Image (cartoon, rainbow, N blue to C red; front, side, top):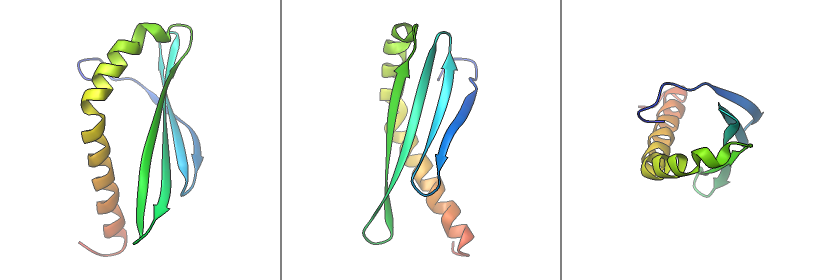
Length: 95
């Protein structure tokens, strides 16, 4: 999270071509990111992300997570999608 020391992430579950789940452990809470990939027309993919905050101490983090992710999520998702497109093109030998 911006302005905070780096946090460790753990990939908890991977379903190839479908989804993956990443957990970030906090003090008494877990922030979970579930990424879903859905094929759509014209060889495109819809990417959605579900974010869940859980655990006994989750209430401590609600405002910070909501503020920071609300401020950076859209742009971050766009950057990740662009990086995925670039990686796919390089694997296919394109530019």
